[in-house]
Structures are given as C-alpha cells and as structure tokens.
Length: 264
Image (cartoon, rainbow, N blue to C red):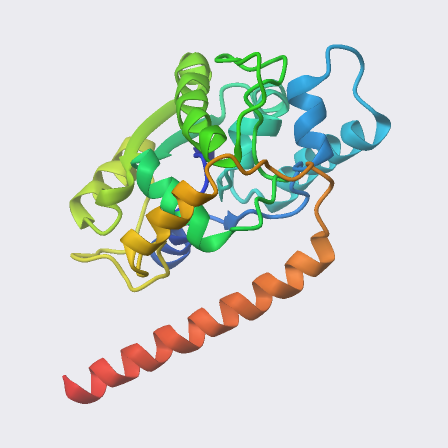
C-alpha cells in the first residue's frame, strides 16, 4: 500500500514522517522531490485546457519516484502537495493501492504557524481560492491569511471527495500526534507492522512557541497582504536549506537524549 497525507501544511507532516521512519520499516519520506508545486500546482488546479510539457513531465517524474521508492508494496509520504496537486495521477496509476491520512489542525493555529514560519507570503505551496478547479471556489482573490482559512476548508472537502477511492483512510488531529494509542490505531487501520512502543519517540513537531499575542497582532496588521506569485520553487536551494535544518534538529534531539540518559 502507498500511504499519503492530506494536509494544509503546518500540521505536523515532518513529525509524522519521522515517526514512520522510527517505528516501521516502510520507506518513509517528507516532501520528496519532485514537488509538483509552484506553476505545476497552479496548472493542475487552474488550467481548463492542456497542461504544459514541463508540468506533465514533473507529474510523470513523481510517479516514477514513487514506484522507485516503493519496497515490498509499501510506501509512505507526508506531503501537503499530494491532495493539492498530484492526487489524480496517483489514483490513476496506483488504483486500489492508495491509503490516505487526513492530518488536520485548528485553522487559527495553522495561520499563526504560517505567520511565524513564513511571513514572506510565499505562495509556491498554496492553493488559491479563485482557481477554476477548486471545490469551494471564490470569485475574488483572497489575502494571504484569508486564503489560509479557505485552504483548510478546501482540503477537507477534497479529502471527503476522494475518500471512497482510497483503499483505507485515517483521521488524525494535530493535537493527538504525541498520543501513542492513536498511532497504534493508525498502524492497525493500515495493517502496518511496527516496533513495540508505549510512548512516541522524540521527533520534531510544529509547535507555537513564540508569544501568541505578538503573532496575532502581526496577523491583524498584515491581514490584507497578498500571496506571492506561485513560481516553480528552487529545489536545489531548498534541498540545502532542508539539509541544514534537519542537521540542526538531529543535533538538538541527540543532545536532549544524551542529557536524559545522563540524568536518568
């Protein structure tokens, strides 16, 4: 089975991929390339005619990547772009093999997290409310924050629309990510063998650590700010940034585990 995550982003997809890596033998990935974001995302959701050669090529590369990384029929990917961009090619090429986890978070917390993480209003990974193929389409272009609220509802509607075409599904609330019994329910639902555990291993998770009032004030000040144009992301530059970010997280987690071991 190939399991994907349906999510808006800023909901714990990175955390989820780490837990799969730590507790199962399934090849598990967080936002692997090709991304199918930016212009590909826009064309898939806003083009009534034919898709460009570059977009078709990237979608085909995505299918090839999933096939190559599947082992013994199993594959896991936590990527917000799945339900936004390449869900249809996956269902067409892997009919009867797709499972989906609907990972959701309170939309107000998501907006706060986006403000804290990405105040530049980068739009390469975001749906736009006025795009032609949306389920909940708006006539007017929404602001960055308004669009985040809309996207929460759109993702939920897309999950419900495709639910019957998924082999198995699981509803996962962000606030339950640290609950071992919920993870056991998930693994049981998909028939996944896992390492025995009584608590969730240490891993990165999207938390709102900064002062919420300060962030909320900034959101109010910038409520009407637009989203940047969805150009194709710099995958090489992002790869380097992600490598550095993951290295920092690994060092931090190792230091924490060492300190716990020494004091234990």
